[in-house]
Length: 622
Image (cartoon, rainbow, N blue to C red):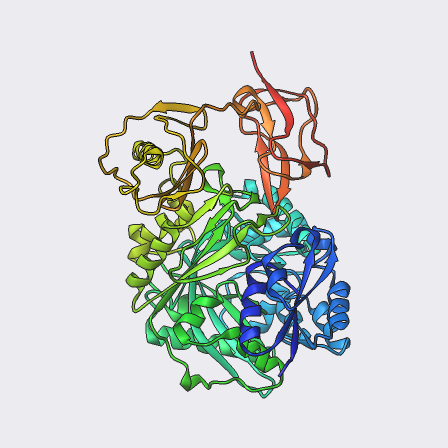
């Protein structure tokens, strides 16, 4: 068995790997960038090695530094987690060449499945059904445009080296194809250093079904059943569950058998996931489920599989990497209950899910369910990495029980001042269609108006905040609301303000129609309710910043300007793209708020900007 393990990753996955390693008596080594010098995974590890500056390209993506850190600390093995270098066949080979153990599949297997076009050809040869599309070497705009037309719109453009929803665009009409292709290629080049793409027919009622597989060096391959990952936003998974709702035993047997064939076709070792797209227009049927790709690593959503099988997949990874056989046979694996996972992101649904960065002055995810996180109160969310801060997992005897528990967990999330999607998660889980398992990958986009919570506090929230403030200021605290915490001596006040709006709220003493907890701290009340957070102050504060209402185009977050489409003096129309900002691995287009003329252009390609920096001004037309 491995005695010392280096984790070539950060955040919640690094912490999760360390927990299992510690239980197995395996010492751990963390690596960290400048931004992560005080991170939780660094504090948890037995040893930690600094590997570079904050950008991942200068730290977590530099394989030589990671291998050097392993040798320096005497680590025998490297676990890549997911993302970063986890599916980099060259890095895996370099680890092996350095005399270290690679906790993952063989480099040849990664390479075989790493390029989506070659992987699909291999799957066809193995008898695994694939989605109709174009896999050709001719990557000219003309050829791709022609093939898209032949396939028939809508089509999906996918980076051949892509993953995690990056380098992927749905195109509904021929007129939009070239612009989508350009954006997809640019994102793929930045994320994977490879801008080649493939095309697939877009399935109109799609469900994303994936199968967890596991292989060892003794020729054994098993599956650990399926997961449903259909709830996605911009191709990024948000809520995942196992087993897939509506999956009958015959269909399960066929799709899982196909996944095992796929893994055997590349002589697979370790944990992997075979991803399928299902045409669910008539329910889940084996003849309407197609191979999409293989993820040659541990998946973000692996906890739901662990919850229904009782297996620790990281333990299996370490045992198999050490040369042991898979601990259980296929006949010894079974499904117990239902599990659902939600990804808690540092983002603000009210501002089109823009990432939210900064200190976690208050961070409480409760004690129910299973929580996987890489941060604690007092830590900071950096703009350099993926905005996922935690995974919330619930298990139940059946799906309804799991839904109810996870919704409760999401509604009780307390995070401040960083914004999260907790309220959005709770609404999605309690939506009638989700409860009834009417799922497809367009679920979130179709229901966005009802899933995004109102960013402004309700009248009941104002009332509750006023009650909290006044009760906290009273000498008799016996009637304090449940969950109220006093962090400082409060000041009696009936005047509250939120984002510039002031109200004199009468205190009635009656129960408000809201379940909430609060913190009264100096001259403010923090109110947490249904996964949202509201800050009420006792005096109105103006921000003093320009806003889109007067034509100023502000940076919505710290980031890098990667495209500027206008020049000083240009006439623009409402909605026209002015520039593109890249932050936290996502592109954000900034558009004109109305017809007018561009003035005060401060942005330039390659420039780094801070949040609320004025990038340009659009003077309205007369």
